[in-house]
Amino acid sequence: MIDATGIERVIPHRGYMRLVDEIREFNDKIAVGVKYVRDDEFWCAGHFPGKPVMPGVLIVEALAQTACFTVLSSCGNNGGKTLGYFVSIENARFSHMVVPGDTLELHIEEIGAKMKMHKFVGNAFVNGKRVATATFSAIMDDNPRI
Image (cartoon, rainbow, N blue to C red; front, top):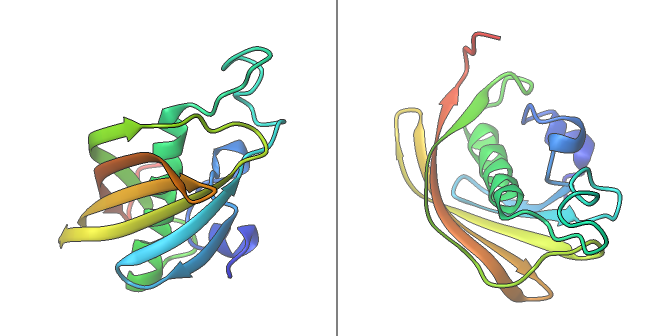
């Protein structure tokens, strides 16, 4: 298992924008990440007041961060300096709400790669029940302009 410190050695996301707390397993094509959904998350106060629900875009982002970890780990990371940018998000579906107290399991599989472009299918689960799915592509940039 890889904890938050180990994740931050590989991907650049920090603070409230790091949406993966653990990586439970990974190889060059698949990974299982975990996000512990807490009641002090930045989105809880406004989405929705008194009845917080994790935004679907953040679930997809958590899947993408898990995928980014897998790619950068397998191709040799450069200390969190390589950035992954969404190119496409397809067929995103959300079937159940994710709320504080849930443990979100993030399952990704790489289904294609060409040069620095990678395509994944991701599924998010809570208590074994699929809550979201999406297919997405990202490009890895190891020389960002920031």
